[in-house]
Length: 126
Image (cartoon, rainbow, N blue to C red; front, top):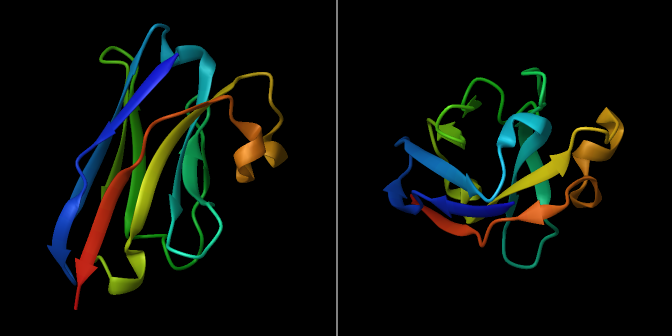
């Protein structure tokens, strides 16, 4: 499966962005889909994801209530809605797909995913 992330940009603190990940080459119905971010000098970390069954996972305490991941199997897309953005959310955001046989604990690290999008830059100004 090929993944294409879009929707990044420059936004002021407190603003919102909606990132979209479009899949091609296969249906996402049989994949666990995750969103990661990587700030300069930091490791790529999980924001959250949604399993092939539809259950969400992840979401740190700082992201809960601000970020929401949803999937549209008919459109073959997975979106990340980000509200109340903060300067520390500035990073490159990646979507990723992992085959459904992966157990939940593996999905919290990049190793739990088999396919990656190219990343989209999100910059939050103060």
